[in-house]
Length: 490
Image (cartoon, rainbow, N blue to C red; front, side, top):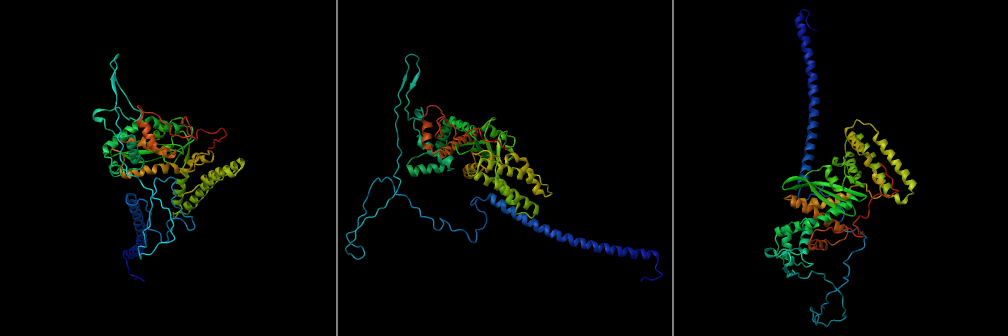
């Protein structure tokens, strides 16, 4: 109780004091809440910083870029599974020489007589000592009595008409092997120089090998253009791209491939014009790729990689948002259903397959019609809606695959080469790399010996287009165009 004699001013001051006390208490409570929220945000920030640093270290890691973290406590035993039949090197079909490993006259331990004599066989497969084969060409030269033209002879095994200071040259198999080691396996020319010296007793220089590779690429240009034509006539082509360097400047290495042939190209841009330049504006097949926007303006039928979308769904499934987890699981389940349907197509009747395909189409439309306030769900819905007509093309085209796995496999060697060489020093070097890697890879796909191909190209007086596609005389791929009964689909 306050004294009765208290003035009005004093009463106002007391009321103001109580109001300020209440306000101060509320502010203290609010500060406590904010401090708790700040502590949570700091903890979340530290966690995200840790993940960012780990991701940056993983991106820059050179010693073990394949490492995915600490080893598992119970890792699988390396090697074949238990119960798997053993594998041994098969018995040689041809034996060049036979040597006898004779017994000593007596036991080396005690000098006793040896009994129960028998013979077992052992085989040693080795490489013989290699010496370079030097061929001298006596080049006949004459002048025409009528016009005075100089005429020079050329043997079928010559690779050049050069004489004088340039008369000593490396042969086609040397240049072909160097090209395959460099452009097909990513081995630097200086290491190739050491290989030739130690393994073959042949002295070469990195510069000479590089010039030989450029010469082989010039002879191979028509063959390279023919591979491009093969892809343009194919029913399906898959594409991918990765970063590259030309003289230290940013560039991109592209791959266009299928089961028949592979073409690489290096370009300063990552735009859709690169794909249009390789496949042409009238490409009538299906282009498989990831969801990179550069492929969107292309007028071709396309199949987007469901593997990439499944990986994205897997990352969303680890989020704290229940809506993101649920939606990602629904999308992943539907995409897997579509892939399983394609695998079972040969076991189903045409009508049954069409009905099952229609159900998946309808289910996908219903899934994309859902509304959600979750930002991650909205992003995925936007992407799937944008690529809707390119998601299930593989269910309509037999040759098309649901994933872009083939292009990713073909571009992986280029990534390894980039880690070793950091790209090319010049435009001429990038053109050489694109041409020779294309021919090397296509030869592997066609079970062709690249050394034989390189020899034939180098011995030709003029660049020529070799047919690398076996089983087809006209150089056309085994899978071309679309069958008349092939449904068009989305």
